Length: 148
Length: 329
Image (cartoon, rainbow over all chains, first blue to last red; front, side, top):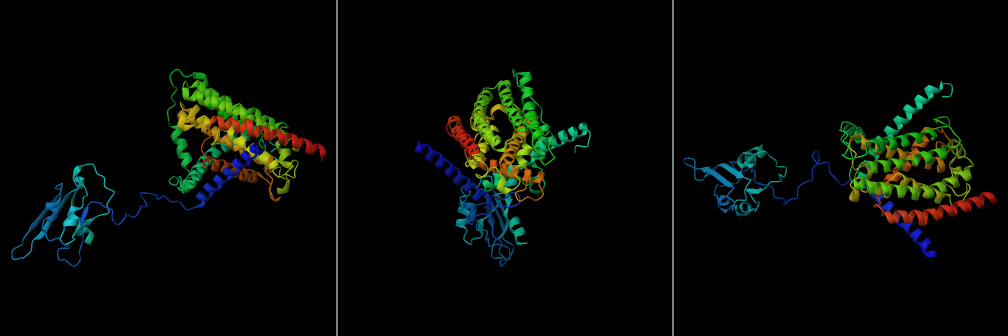
């Protein structure tokens, strides 16, 4: 008989403890973000597609020397560089940097192999499009836009 | 209100009660989502109107614009009648709920009895809906709902008998009139019986079970029975079940506050009126929601054991004790 009352008492007590826990949760601040209006800050090592780093000191606006290491190292062949050597100039100048992100596996060999550290990963994660062409990026243009 | 011709009074109360049932459902759905959200540390609805208060309106419009599909081989009469019946019972019990000293549609002397007589018809609506929709889950759910309602009607009515013995009346307005301030509320043990707080608890638990609210929502156990008795209902058929459920939750909580917490009386004696009843009722409604989002659903055996092995013996013991105390003091 005392076991019965014990059980009823313990049951009521555990139920109250449960209510207490949910009440504490209810008055604590919310942990969710309202996504389209608010977004989580991406982690520093997040890998989006690669990007040319804008460089204010360089004449061309970036550190790229058009050596082509990234293009050669890319296992998927998604990087196409275009460069030219103006008459009288000593160095090549980058005239186009095309990234075909549909093929990219984000391995990061291009970023690692760059001798001048001109590349890094962007924090872009909201990528959506209707055609494959939407994912072919002109990184030189993006770099110009970011510098402005 | 008594100087108006009877027909205007009737129309005013019918309109008022229907509006209250509708608004109550809209507000309760919004409150339920907000409570659920914050307990899970989310925000809940916030897009439709300030703090999302028009969310339920949007839901209502969506439900009303949907087609009503009657399943093949469903019982044409029972299937259509069930949602209406659950709504009718929800509206009818409001007739005797006293919202204020004079604000009661029909101040009859067996109001308490009438509420239980009508509210227990609600389970018939669930049975009709479950049986009539030609769906095995709905039938399982309907049988569960019936066994649950039978089990919880017993301790609830025994508790109500205890309260009637203490108050000496079945007229709800008289019962409220006896609890003029905080100290005279029937929830406190010095007002008739030592175990009145336990009575309140039993009444409240039974009210939750009667209205098929979680953790006693075996009737619509989503994870096992799709949606239970309203599996086959769409659009406003489902909408009426929903309105009815929230109407019953409101009535259960209003009754608990009338019997135990002084109804429309102010705890400190200022300005008695409808606002106090609504405040107390919605506090209890909030507790019902808080309970729902805290506990997982019980099993059918756990539910019946709780009723027959704990609530019934306790309520009977309180009845005997109360009778003895009333006789002695």
